Image (tube, rainbow, N blue to C red; front, side, top):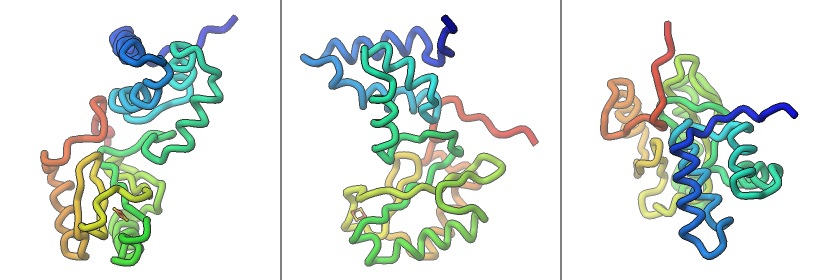
Length: 178
Ligand code: FES
């Protein structure tokens, strides 16, 4: 039988098993395990989904369903900075569509895409629980609120300079070779 491509390091597998052991029902740790995988790899590739399914003793399609359902998991590689724009009602009423259009125009990509240099991805999100700062977005997992046109321009300039307030989306991120 062909062996599945192994993407999860032995250390990460051990961490996942520790997470499972800390819950009365080991399967309760699945979302946390997927977060850790994404933190390591930058996204959750299919071979990693299959591998984690095996660790949890779950059908692989159940893991695929979870990864597809929750917007926070990336099913394809993303850029150094993931701009996650809230599209829910408070942000929508305060101008999230203008923010998305501004990002798309400035970065010359569409929602769901990554710039060719691998620096930026734009993704949509449900409510980020920062409605008082609407319209808001996250850069990787850090909040950026009250996204006026000027503040978004300033944010992009900071990110292009490699502002270390917003670390790369994953530990393995490397600049693309030119
Ligand atoms: S609606 Fe955007 S953070 Fe709640």
